[in-house]
Image 1 (spheres, rainbow, N blue to C red):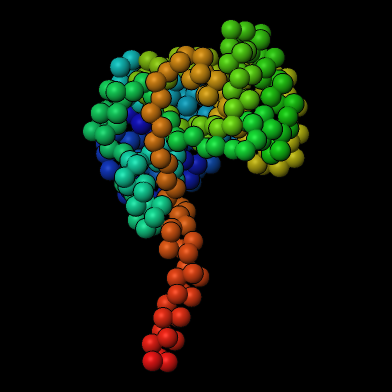
Image 2 (cartoon, rainbow, N blue to C red):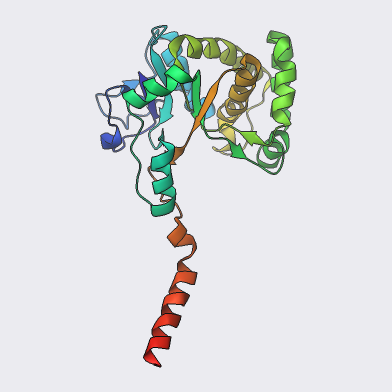
Length: 266
């Protein structure tokens, strides 16, 4: 089962397979009756403003919604994995892709350990990129938590921060046993950081600090575990891509107008 994390009602007609199940996160009531909710059972739903989609992941983990060999994972109400071929048509022609169905997911996971979004490459390192957008002391708190809880990961953490690419969105598909192992590693680190952090980020975006940190920590865990990663494109249902035609519209218009004028002048 792949969980589609949402914090509101959305058009779920794009979901093309029974493998997807919608999970509403947070305390608001802007959801449909058939959605699962992360504020029952063992949960950290009240922390959603800080942990984002991770409150959903925690609920999935703690309430035993994963059979060991089942394919599972997390995507978002507006972001989904798709094939490279469909993404190519999306980026070049603006044609909305289809969401990966269970057949495609199964075939890919038979050949690879985990599916992640394609790397986002940056000119600066992950550490410098984080410092430019967030509070750099967050990363030191994470390092201290890793040294305390799992010191064998410190080198992988420092190496990750020196990289010029990252896996974003906290999206992942893999076998349930593997995702459970990730949760058992991730959440103690985040809770350790939470105990040391003063939450005075100042705005709702910066308050989402644990979501930002988890994006980096997923990469640390993948690196240390030496997992076989299949990178797949991610598309956003709420954004229209800038196609080749869109990027070159002025040039195309100029060429057409020049051609028309030339024909008029004989």
